[in-house]
Amino acid sequence: MALRPSMLVLLTALLGVGAAEADLVVLDNQQALRGTVKDDPTSTDHVLIKTATGTLRLRRSRIASIEPSLASRLAVTPVDDLAALIEIGRQCRAKGRNAEALEALDKAMALVRADSKRLTDLSAAALYLRLVDEIRGPETALPLYRWFRSLGGTDPATIARLQALEAIAGSATGDAVLPPIAISTTSDPSARGGLLSEGLELRGWMGESPQWSNPTETEVVPLTGKDALKGVRKALQVRLAAPDKDERRGKAAIRKPVNISCAEEHVFGFRIKNTVEAPLMVALAIKTGDWVFYESQPQTVKSGEGWKDVRFDLKAKTFKSKATNWSHSAAVEHLDEVKELQLMFYTRDQEGGALISSMKFLGEDEL
Image (cartoon, rainbow, N blue to C red):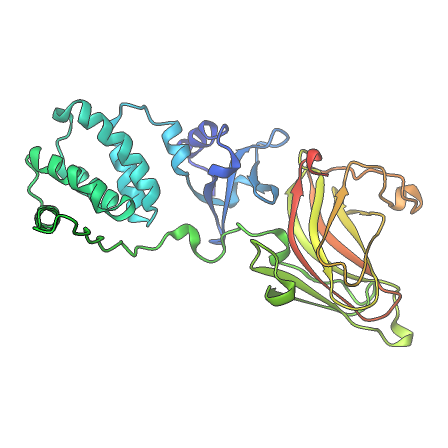
């Protein structure tokens, strides 16, 4: 499926949008992710999608649709385009993105207050009042409801809400609290399953072939109690079984197929906690280009030391490969074509275990 010309124009316009204002990109398999899309300078058939966990490299044909963030849409909308600002507000509201809807309509109503003759559809003002009431409260909304009435607004629900608030505000006690309005329960589609806002650890990991690895088990688990980590709800749990004597491989490995470009964010990092009493050594292995294998020097994770930050600089000459005769003296090549990630665990063929969280590609300044 090729991107439509209008979508290509939009992609070009969005290049300056930061990751914090990411767009919703839906792929042809209905998987959704948050990121900023830009052209791949090495291939007209591919795009790069910068996400919170790194940069993905995908074929253009994989993208089914792009739902730009509010910041993206406002960046390409003239500041005095009242109709466009109102339409953005309506669309955000329809998708449950109420805060964004209010932000867009704030800009639209500022234009109306400067020149009320520009507003020909008072239903937009009624929607604005409802959002202000829901988000900022009835005290802030009351003078705006009165403004709506002064414009000639007659929407029954809006006028009824105004009358109810005025009746309470004008009560004899003088200190009555204005009741909040019922908040819309429309769900935000960006919160649906499949949105890639989590780290790389929560999807797609599997055990390496028994030909190369001791037995492993992987499972995404909630973090509670002594394993709790602030701001993190889930982690990847890895269990390493002790192999039979004639099946020992000296290491255990898990792998994750990917299609990532990390030429800019070339530091791979995660947090890890050793969950057994024996020390654990972990290394990163990566396959790039024509499936060339590289493995880092291992790092030790002691038992009982809690969560540990681990970093691997893919441009550092500390990786081994066939080309180096398996000495740790090479940097990883073809970082624009990362095909597979692996975590290698060295436990001296004993049982082992770990929890892993916050896995992502980082910039060099985050080493």
